[in-house]
Length: 174
Image (cartoon, rainbow, N blue to C red; front, side, top):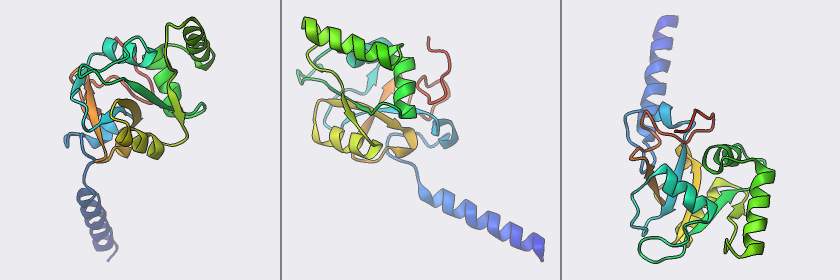
C-alpha cells in the first residue's frame, strides 16, 4: 500500500509542477538553472533584446543615459540589504555598497551623472516601476518575472541558459 501512495504523490506533485508553467522570457529547457539567476528586465515597449555585459555595466553606472530610440534610461534597483542588490553590486558594478554610494554622490556632484538609480523595497515594485516607465531597466530573480516586463538577454543568453552570467551566488564574470 505504501509504495502506491508514494507513486501517487510523486505523480500528483509532478503534475502540479508541470502545470505551473514558466514566466515569460524564460526558456523551458532549465528552470532549475534560472532559480538563482537575476533577470534584467525592461519595459515591454523597449526595442532592446540583447545587451553585452559592457553595455549593461555602462547603463547601470550611468555612463549610457539613453536607449537607441532616444528614451532616457532609468535604472531601478532593490534597496540596500537585499541579496539581489548585493549580487548586482558585486557582478555588474564591481563595488560594494559604500563605493556605490560614493560613486553616485561624486558623479552627481560633479555633473558627470544625471541621476542615481531609483531604489525600491520589493521585486514586485521593481516590476511595476518598469511596467510604468518606458525607459526603465532593473533586475529581479528570474522566477519572479511575469508578463508585465520583458527579459533582456545578456551576452545573448537568457537567465535559464547554461552560461548566463548574473546569479545570486556569483560565478566569475568575464
